[in-house]
Image 1: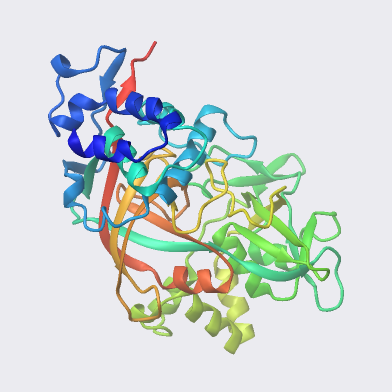
Image 2: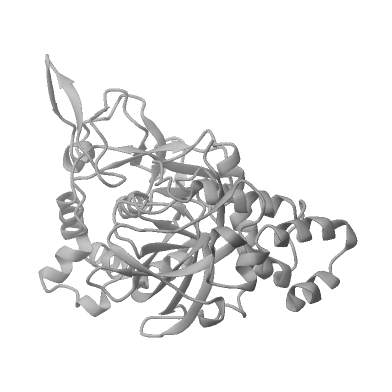
Length: 418
């Protein structure tokens, strides 16, 4: 434990007791990684966590074997992890679909250890020690696959208004009161929705019907935009910042959808030979729609799904709201398959991504926290990386369709179930 003592020696005395408490709880596992047995468990009401993810095999790896682990900013990851801890302790009022409870008890135990470090964010070296002491890395390898697959997402920022006029004539609709959702589908933004017509339930209006005015005149508009393409990309991302004429920012979040099937329009452009697969990005989709507005409108209507929004009481400096109910952190939050993973779980990403421009491949080695989910995020090693808000973040996010290594950080211990 000499390295641990070296780190502790440089820490302010008020935090010392808390740091020791964190280390004592897991000292046997740290000293003898990866062996954990009942004989060397601390004398507490704890049990070791043995992870399992359906559809994948998990291989234990050492922290030293994670490329880029030592160079990462663990303090930044700790700050994002602590936001998830707050949501685990007190569920927020605004939450999305629930995640798998698999690691929830272990994460709560790790969160209790994090709380003992005090209210301030620890120094990067100490934050790294926290993760190494309280978690073990497991490489997730999907059945029939080799590793992870990453895409990116962001929060669009577009010009808009609270009233129509002056070019703002594209309505952003809130959730209609006649929308009847059936049982949830296997992923977010899936499953049928209905409305009553006479005495019967019929499928809810599709995108074309809504664009043609099926919801007009009902007072459902939460904002108005200039460009229907902006609305389309807002709906793909599930959130937006609307820049109002007076400079204020209106924050919008996902509030349901019309129950119609989602069809990725990028796939249609590839199948029809209009965009090469290797060049596909959100920028190419937008360019196609802008070059031929009529063809773009027809393409959008082939995706019959339509997303509704609600106004969120969030500050301008906060990230988009994730399904866990906490604002996302650019570069530290990611979306996972909620059926397989637990919100709040740290995941180490190893991938080479086109961060600076198309065709580039730069190392992305970062500890991120699962705080969100998405309809296209399906699979044990599938994740969507959140890059923040605005056009620059959107440009990076839109280029990502890349393989990489997906390493789950699993809590070493969990409190025994009562």
